[in-house]
Length: 308
Image (tube, rainbow, N blue to C red):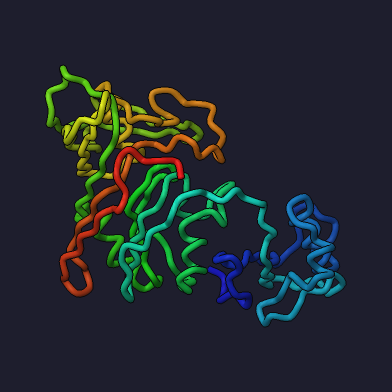
């Protein structure tokens, strides 16, 4: 792990860091680069405007002093900097603060907002928005919530609280209820418990059911109400596999409305916010591992979810 950053967060993001190697690149005719500028050019050309960053004193050493392009090369030395961020369309919809204390924050997120900075979604993520908004530089999510899924997300205010709360999610001690809008299927005998083995493969959008493999995913699904030609379904996952509820609904012949991946992957731009997935993380309940209090939270949203 690197030492503490000499640079403060910017836009809710920690500074990036690099560490010079003790020796030069394998096969290099020289044992080391002659200058720090030469090493930075070798490492970052094509990704960062190295000359511009050096001129602007945007690379710094551990003590906060700027890195000079002609500084002699220093082995095993940390260099810190903030990357330039690409412009991102603003994700519509309110980010509701449901609950906050010294240890956790519970929010109700809109669809299309990533939980963590990732890929093309950096500033437009829950973590980056809220770190700046709430003044909590160590804020981090305690569980997953897909970018296209709406609803409740629990975050730890500081690193020291993460372990105790994450253990609840890992042990399945957090009671979760989702609600989804999907086609009505009169022939379907509900409620039903779906139990199977789900698998995801690197580089593939869709997960899959593996027949005959040991059960690793379980959900209880029931019809709660009718809404025109669609039904409002109550989904209670007992495990937390990737895309579990979406795959279980698909397997019952009632794929969730406006799902961009199931039953087929659709060519939808990541910045197209017109048709939100009709899946809502609507309720969360657990016993607080620190003070033993019963915690219960409910989304302020309802189905059908609208494009704000």
